[in-house]
Image (cartoon, rainbow, N blue to C red):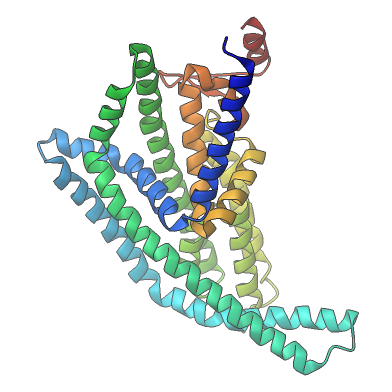
Length: 361
């Protein structure tokens, strides 16, 4: 046992360093989001690169090949949905104007003395601010995605060497063994999680496009892409997609009386996916605490914008897997979510047993 005063001082210094680090990272979104996204891409694509390396392909060429395929797929998606997305973007001011007109009518009902000219000016200002926000977010996401692909190449090519050097720098065989378990768990489980979630989201996008095609909604594939992307964003993403579908169906020139069915059926599709499909495929061992998820998404979106909101859940998943794999951190893993991933990949149920293990220490 050390001196209590020294221990308290060390605790406060550590807290100050964490606060300073968080402050620096909160203003460095241009670097943090692409870096984390590059690491996540590397975890998901790592097995494909390793398979090519085992066939005798140099690691740099293997990483470049896998990333070229990914870039080709992303480019194909952009080309295939460019015209529908542009049409939706051109239609967005009309939708915003209609919504602002509804809000203005409600406001004038509450405060009838508001002049019509003021309402028109507010509507125009809302449209301009909305268009500026969308343009800024899209440009930032595009630049961040390009930087993330570059960082992914470096992580896939030289990341393992850096990791081995860091492990060698650790003192003690026990520490090395523990961190090897952590790294192996993150590489295996997070990669598996990202691949399965991507496959599920692609299925959601295809199902959404087919649903909207049946109801003759314009640009169904564009909405399918939007649904697939927003499905990475828990809770808020499906609600945003439902709202967009409802607005588009409601403002269609000839929506008919069944305009409410597309958003309702999409939300039913989301419930089936989130409550039955995803749990059955991913299992319960990666179940994160909903409060932690909401808090993480809010903090990441405030600090790093839309990109931070999308990478919040995969980052929390990686943190939980790391905590589960490290013997000294498993109690913190329970704070993030239920269950524990052991070193061999099996799930340990906790609850009363967790309290018992704490009491025996």
